[in-house]
Length: 198
Image 1 (cartoon, one colour):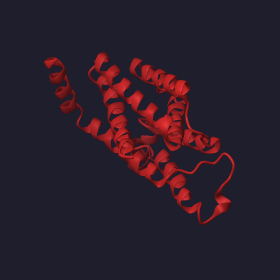
Image 2 (cartoon, rainbow, N blue to C red):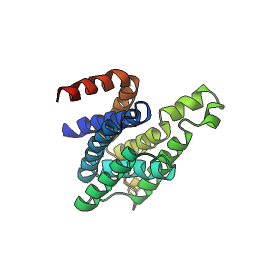
Image 3 (cartoon, rainbow, N blue to C red):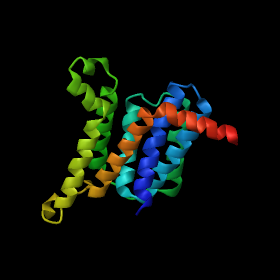
Image 4 (cartoon, one colour):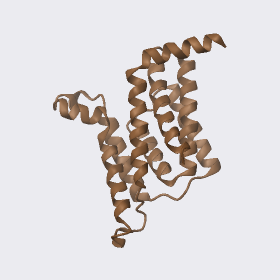
């Protein structure tokens, strides 16, 4: 479905834009608007895809546990996401997969912008800057998902394997997250000028 990769990219973009609008520009209005767009996008993905539900709920829990939900825009996006998925419901997900993805997301959040990690060297810093723990976890479940038809023994209760395109979509999410950060000033100024017109 074409909408799915678009929403992954859209949500990654506005997640980062919301963070930077709040942290760098102290523009609460723009940060909240971006957070709402992100929250609605990931909620739609979660209620329509079991892979997305598992992935984004894991990110949500990992972020909360690492105490990174620390601003108004974060809280509003979190509440909006929860309200939508609770009201509409989500597809069945594997609890083991959810736990492992949550652990990976938590490790990434703890390692990101961590002075102790930076002391370990540039490689470790880059690993956590780009949150590779969760990427590798998603890749493993996606590759195992490809192998299930050939190795039925892999099918186990409470373990959910991802479709391989989910890994590609997640990379798309991350790519647009990084683009929003790298080009933030230009994007922010563009949105500012657009809103002035209206």
